[in-house]
Length: 154
Image (cartoon, rainbow, N blue to C red; front, side, top):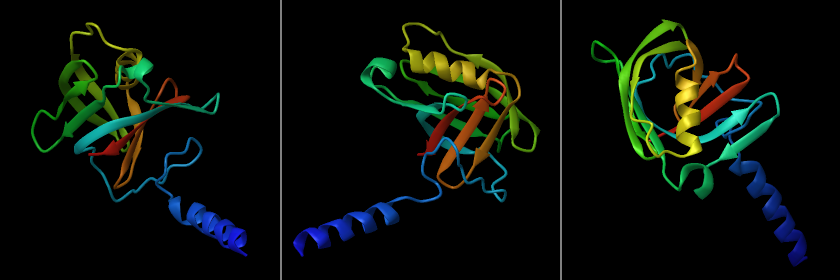
């Protein structure tokens, strides 16, 4: 009887702990009412949509450091800034179309940074990148939409 209660509890926990905003390669709930990238965002994963794999932060790929960036389109020019593991970044961005933006400049030193910082630079500098967004997450698609980087709202 005790084991049965534990199993039921685990099943219920599993069902109620997942939401539509959870990190998933195959699904990401886009909220069309959110029309701006404004805010501070932290990278939580890089996804290869072709290989169906997700890479989360480790000591090896990020040296245990975070990528945290801020988009501010309340000013002109629109600004992008933050910390990409070991280096600061800054630049301007513009919206190209709905759910698409382009960085105009990406100022950083690229000195002594781990793989995650390199991946992030490649993602946001991939031309006119597309994105999906909701109140908790931002997903930026790059490399002809075969890869993405998922960020969470800070």
